[in-house]
Length: 154
Length: 156
Picture 1 (cartoon, each protein chain N blue to C red):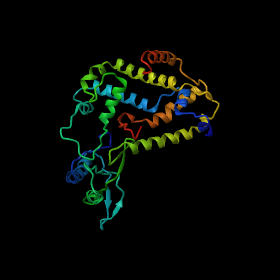
Picture 2: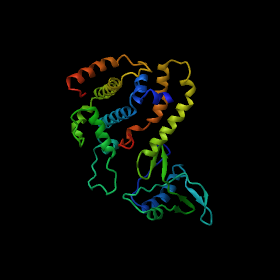
Picture 3: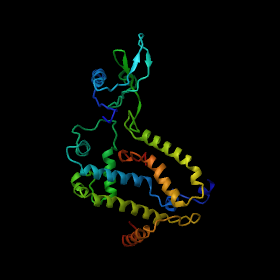
Picture 4: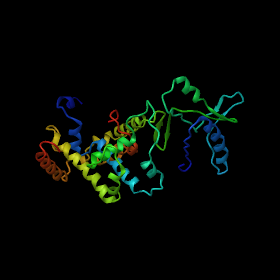
């Protein structure tokens, strides 16, 4: 494993080589899909009730600051633009009603994330291009365009 | 309740003590046996209990208070012990309600699978097949149930 340190091979290079997304991105996409399922459920079902439930009393001292709700809101903010910090349900629930559209949003987002990693890190000289999926070339072009248009921000 | 597994969420030890005996007798009418441990005549554990209780403190408590609150629930000659960690439908629940234990457990399983597949990964099979196997087995195992994980800074 001395090659890793010697040639400065990063996780991103390995993921680019094998065309595998970041595990955190996979988790966020799974959470996004699950939120869509909850949103399309009948309002009488328990998971949907949990989604819209509100705890009336204040948080105990010593309790967790970062909760599952925060995690879900962060996921929504990553994938959808214009989601407020409190993740108010009105801001994304109508969008989630269309299953196909919701699924496409998640899939496109993870492909963009993967393409962004390829753009930032590129192939490692020792490893080469690897088995990059050809569909990423479109995303790479798109990211390059946005990168140049937005003064270095994607 | 899921097939023959059941979880009850209660707000006090008194409720748990009342419910344990009630569930034990009620479930027998449906042919379901609650696997509580048995005590001998001296009050010592005779058989191990598969049914377990977990105490999740609402606010930080001293160890003495926790120990006092987590003594065995005894009803007749049966008992239900308390546990710090419980595996339910493949996911590990701990008293602090954090996901660290569950995630570490999943990662350990995935590492074991990746190690078992080492011969295949070092074989002459094409890279795309290796990628698909890697995603289908170790990655799927590691990320099973990841939808309900709270991804805080520590876990990332």
